[in-house]
Length: 451
Image 1 (cartoon, rainbow, N blue to C red):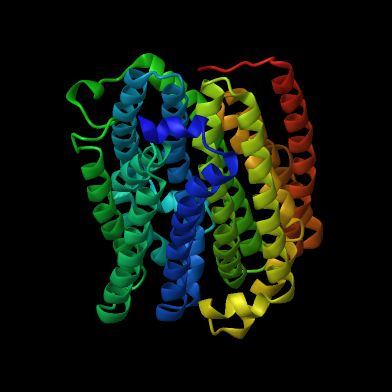
Image 2 (cartoon, rainbow, N blue to C red):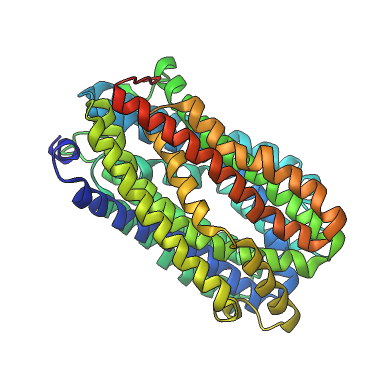
């Protein structure tokens, strides 16, 4: 248990770097793995295939929503249980994350495959892009359980004191994905289906490695026969905490659908392709912030469980500083050097021009996104599920979705692009108020949690 007990004793700065840096490398690698997919598809298949990939984003977000609901919920429960010295509870959370991902992963894949074409048209596919989107999603859905299990268990590994090992496993997935993409797309000519197959093959290899980790008898938290039983209390705790990231990803699915359909209506398939590029690049920077969040999560969760609230606040404050600094750098890059970061995706001049304009508008208030993401993760990591749920959904539900429904009617495609930074600014103010009130309560000792 020494690897987890150090969470309550070592300096916050060194702990945050120790846990964040591997997570940042892993998350950056994951986003690069998506960027590489887009580059291979954009240059190896064509701009319409890139638009077809963009249509798949809301579908992928919906799948990720279910995975995050289980994985993030389990990670928080494991961290807090370990902080409370409740090893049995942590073991049961490990077993239940496997069971829930198996059930949810299979059901999601079956339902999605049955209604695949109608769903893709609903998400913004056209007759010109539906074949690309269909080929890509068929493969991903067949391997959906693998994706859920790999991501869920990798998150739990980080929470139990192995951030570096979790990072290396993610790097294995990234490197092998690039190799498989080259083989399947360039050598074998499998097109967009080859990109999806490469992703699943890479994740299968990484799942085998992380499964082996939890099967080793020397590990304090490992697979045991008795943990693979559904425990109502553990499941409720995991899903209650996981509801915040679930709704955040589910709403992201609705948002991407509205963006795709709005761009298709007022601009056409090339605008949808431009969003595909912009989304990948923004996602790259967002994933780095998520790396900081993942580093913060076990620190705040453990110390919250151990009632060391001053350490919780120190971890939160330092993570905010890192996240806002990073997103400020991203803002500068996107505003002043858009062509450099967009060119690797396509040689089509129209697509380049559309993408450059879009990324400059979308990232207008980017530092506020960094602040809000850390604030939301703060509530999740200490088990304040209802507040995390509200904070994670208010940007999309209260602001972004209404803007996407209204502004394009008057501004066309620019209405789609401008909806995003406006919603970022307003929701950041809400996050600031909520965090300030919670910190005041924590300093007074007025603590509440579902755990």
